[in-house]
Length: 370
Ligand SMILES: Nc1ncnc2c1ncn2[C@@H]1O[C@H](COP(=O)(O)OP(=O)(O)OP(=O)(O)O)[C@@H](O)[C@H]1O
Ligand SMILES: [Mg+2]
Image (cartoon, rainbow, N blue to C red; front, side, top):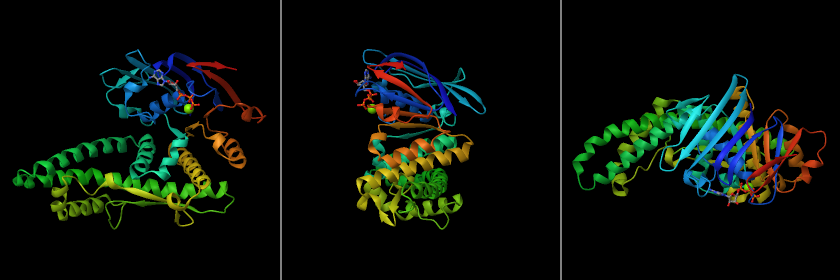
């Protein structure tokens, strides 16, 4: 799939942007703070319903204005999709697909698939479990809208159960009502665990392959799910659900003390290792960067396999961070993938003759096609 056209109104530092893109490499170059990443951000929002940089839509509205609007025209094998996302101060975000207003943000999922790779992605390795969960949640949601809705539902029930645990401090009799919440949480939680387990298994397999290619077979990359709920078979929803309920039953005292739910997908993590050693603890900066690249390439493969089409790749500021070999590998292996690349120095790409490259100069909220 590829994006043909983009329109932005009052988004970040763009008053009005209206332009077409090539289906191969689109190089957005320019000085710092001109609006290169803002374009990738707007594309990412249309794929996943949220920004990769902020959870506050207010920040996305151009200063002094009261709403933003994004439109992308996507060409897919199944036909064209016109995706519109808009947000007005103090109102809900709105989504339209092919001109039809959708009731939920989740309706965006599955219309446009993107893989974003930016320097912040190193957080997948360096930061805590919530960053790692966020990464897989965004990717899986793009492929499985039902997973996105399950996550929303799970978080809602989780908040309600935690509120109940707090209220139980003053009213012990409420303990009788906990059962219902346990069953609700475990039912939807088990579905999340199953999908995560399947996804991480696949991610590990594909990441290992791409990492082998990137490092000439020198290093073995593995990713292992570390679920909060231990069950005999993570692919068996009923089995996970029962284990989850049991765990909640035996830890009710501790949970009442802490006033929070101590087990479940909200505590999941996964380990990324090189030759069996934790990358977070033992990996060099370069090894970590290459590992993230391998994971991103794996994501592309998984999306291709799942949807039958290549996703759109968004590379924000990463080219200059990679060594010559890895840069070459990327350019040579992304032929069928529409790719957006931001950089400050276009000379690096100008030298790559023979490739289908389109250049766009970004200058304070204006884009000039060469
Ligand atoms: N809500 C907003 N309203 C107006 N301008 C904004 C808003 N949010 C961000 N900006 C401006 O957008 C610019 C940053 O855009 P962006 O992050 O796309 O830069 P960039 O070209 O990617 O730069 P770099 O090379 O440093 O990554 C800054 O000048 C910032 O002040
Ligand atoms: Mg940037």
